[in-house]
Image 1 (cartoon, rainbow over the protein chains, first blue to last red):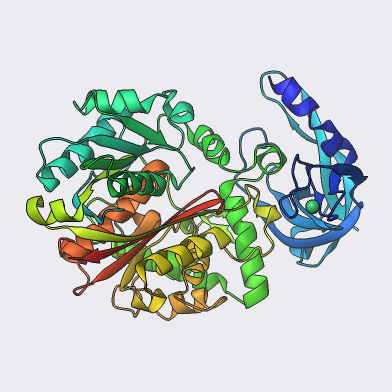
Image 2 (cartoon, each protein chain N blue to C red):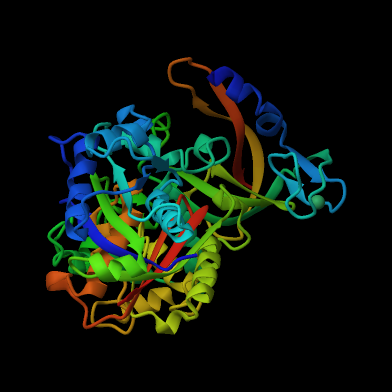
Length: 128
Length: 385
Ligand SMILES: [Zn+2]
């Protein structure tokens, strides 16, 4: 069921909650049940920093279904603190995108789920 | 573990096979492989298929495919590892025969991708990525490899033209392959002027959507020497490794670490190194992928894959021929079948049966197949006998 599938991700998508291994300190986004580095099974909830930098980027010209109205749009891998994540980069000029560029996380609408019509919100980045 | 050989191979003409169902697409090359091997029965089957459920709403291929191949009630196992499903089916068949559990085993791969429209195919393929943290945010597979390309260009100075040379070379090879989906030459200019899909990747940097299948027959090496009708090739190594599902979780966004690890295992098992390989079939789902993979396999230094492609080192007459079959780019990429088609090409080259695209007397060939953005990789090495 799509509603449940989106709803259970809300702590990550709305609040940028990550899991920090209580033994070795490795941060996971999303959190998980076991740390791959030290095999510890306990995590504390931490919030990712809301500023970071672009590690790589592209502009999607041929979008997947559900994103037709938005193309072309930029997508990047962004480093926020110790975590790398994939996000759209919006409110930007494509030719100003650069590896190392600074970005800030914002709360935005991501997609509308096809038949159920649920509005899915989450994180996107904008130039900082 | 017993030594194992491949004694039969089969493939059909790949493309948009509107008039053929998944079952017929599979059975055709499977019958060819059985005939090529000269065997009258098989003991078991492993078939790679990424997503028959999403592409044609059909699961339970173990039953369907043995049934329509006329081989029921033999055991069959459908294998899934995204675009590496075929390579993994081959590994499972190899382990099965090597272990002594079965003697004559068919390893196949199939994908029927054109019963859905382009959006449906993009959706099905995107399930090989992290659904909740990659696909959810609107990235596609060309998009993920475009991220790899941007990073590689930034770190090593790989150029847009170097990417184009991979496509030009693979299409030139595909012209010589009668089974290829797009056996036509393309020029660097055509690649650079084709429509942008995900910057910097353009349409002619991408492998196509394809219906197709391939099959090979394995048996113990001792048996192969007695019964092989059209020659055999010995499997000297099988390496397998995984990596994070999400591309963004990788430490180095310019390398395919699962392929590097699978290759290290395979080289160790075969007692050889990259310089001992005469040619390779690799997973060029996008032009940047071939560049990163040839680096991961140790054929070229990190960052030098693009330069090598541009200099012609990977051409059929170069020092390390890559994808003499035309690769995924020209031959087509029915995802579950690709890993088996690579073994098909390696065996045909080693047996001297590759027709117009035959390389000069190769002794040792390598096949590299990967899933998703490199979340799983298989490397096999075969030798002429
Ligand atoms: Zn830990």
